[in-house]
Length: 305
Image (cartoon, rainbow, N blue to C red):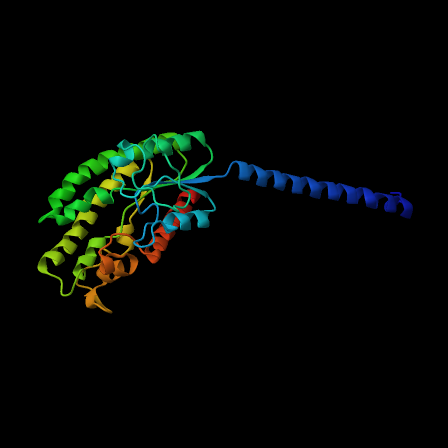
């Protein structure tokens, strides 16, 4: 076969270079267009719920909480409809949020509609651009039960409403989002375990009984109801109660200052929430970070499935 002359080969060099440059420019242009499209149409992370969903902490108000952690790790754009004090009933029936917390990350106001309707409308309007939905709701439905002499019947009654309302809420969110968007519900740390040490030591028999009964309430009533409600809408529940050690036998103890020898489960709730120090049910930064990690792990698993 006849070889090309040196001059012919030299003539090919700039042509090949131009083709390569053109390819680079084309790829760069595609990347820039993709980046611009992502900026115009980000993938959203929708948060629905109560004060846990807005990261409330006593003395600090709204903080990044678990939703901020999840948004950073998943690189989704947070849209937060959470409302402090929300119950499973108010999220569906109450117009506006009576307790909007300043500085809530990704906050959305909805003065003329309910939290559920506002979230559903957003999801519908951004169909195809929703990457994740989380829901923290139900804790405020049972808060008043802790003042009852026998809280278990009170929780049992509340669970009926929780099941109905959360099923309705989760189903509506699923309908708006479509079948493939991860829908993750969350439960709570068992803060009432802190009754072992708050407000004073030694704990009274009544406070010890309350702490013990709170474990039964979460393990046998509240969390099974939430599992069922989210599953009805193709969602899953992150069992924060179990992950924060509440089901560790209360006979298993550890030594923690300034309390002395206390159950391991109590020590964990003291570390992850404000209850042992202030009698406040909300998580600390450490607690919210743990919850965020649990959500990211479950989200990652659902995306791979």
